[in-house]
Image 1 (cartoon, helix red, strand yellow):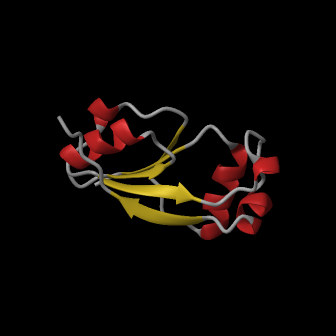
Image 2 (cartoon, rainbow, N blue to C red; image 1 turned 45 degrees about the vertical axis):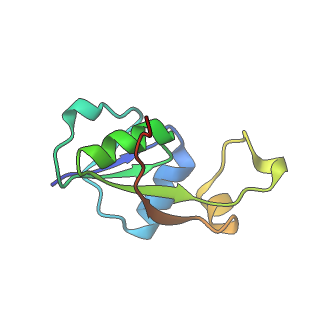
Image 3 (cartoon, rainbow, N blue to C red; image 1 turned 90 degrees about the vertical axis):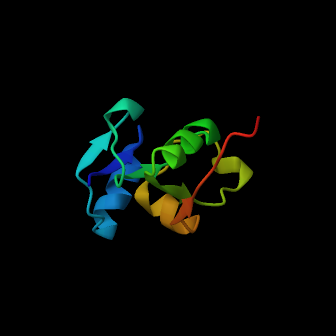
Length: 97
C-alpha cells in the first residue's frame, strides 16, 4: 500500500513535511493506472478522478481549506495554509449515469 501526495505547490509540500505526513511518493501529476487497491492519495483532485479512486478502492484524502477570495489563485505558503485552517478529509465519489 502506497501513499501518494499529489500537488504542484511548494507550500503544500512544506505543509505535509511540517505535519510529519508519512508519504511514499510526492508527485505533481497522478497516473491512476499506477494505483492499486489499498493505496492512499492525498491532494485536491477533481471529482471525476475521486470517483475513479473510489471505484479502485483507493482511499482519497482531500487537502481542504476555506480560502478567502483574495487568496484564491495565489501560491500559498505552508503558513498561509495553516492560517486558512487546512486539514485532510476523506471523500468518496461515484459517477451517476
